[in-house]
Image (tube, rainbow, N blue to C red; front, top):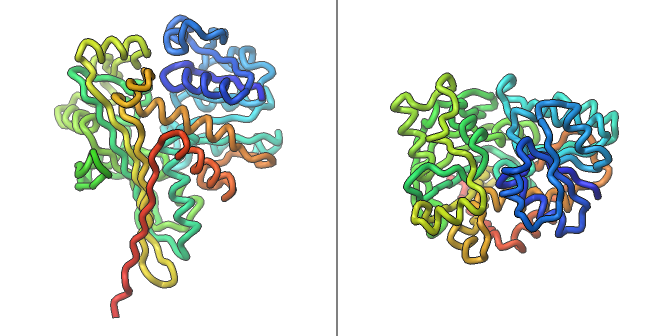
Length: 383
């Protein structure tokens, strides 16, 4: 399959490499080919085209002839890239929504009819969170007779003397200044920024961590697929604690704009190696937990999924210079590409994929060294 990857940064560059290993014919484009080459590597023979992702003609010209257009750019560019995919009559894949104009309806949904008319698939939110988290909920829903609540809990921590962007600085800033969406008692609404703090226990070596509400795409799509009454997402770790402090100090607002000091450009692999060797960057961790509450044979039941990803230290031992978030997202993207179901058209989310596809992706996730565990807790019905 001919695949064009738009956005050759920390995640996009690894997507290019992984898809090429899968046997696809891969080409790519970025607004800054010189910087993109730092991520892709000087030894790669893949040509990086200069593409302005804000310009429809520029994207169409660069991706001409592709069967699949992968959008690895900030979500603010989703609409332009989706129009380009339609113009090219290509399938489309991305990892997140922008949700600025319609906070509880992903902007990609407005292109559903056009993709159906073209007979093409637009798979959105095909990453880790969202993406893998949605598959966990769908897998749990298949085991329960009735659903009640889904909770997404993330852990992100960078042990560094200075702020380090594990992935897109633009995306990190947008999530930090957005009001977190929640789904409570069957209705969409907003929660307090960095609010509703609770203590949540992740598997070792992380342990007990304070988590707070965060803007996550799972909240906008899970209630549309499953009959849930409550959905929320919270994040914990040193990174979110720092954002919370800046917010309380009034330093984290949309009007102030993106500060390159607080949200530096994503470090290239060579830069990351220098930071590790210089003692600036020590380690980074990323973990995901999804809890689904419901009923099975009338008894209350909790199904919990946990996913632990290699730390920065573990990746460095493999001679890989990627952050845990970029590494895990790129691998999930390629798994979604590998198992894209034939015949499915329109705008689709991971939790709505066929059960066979869902199981295949989860199986491959474990084979890549991502540690996945599942626990089931049943409660007796009180007399």
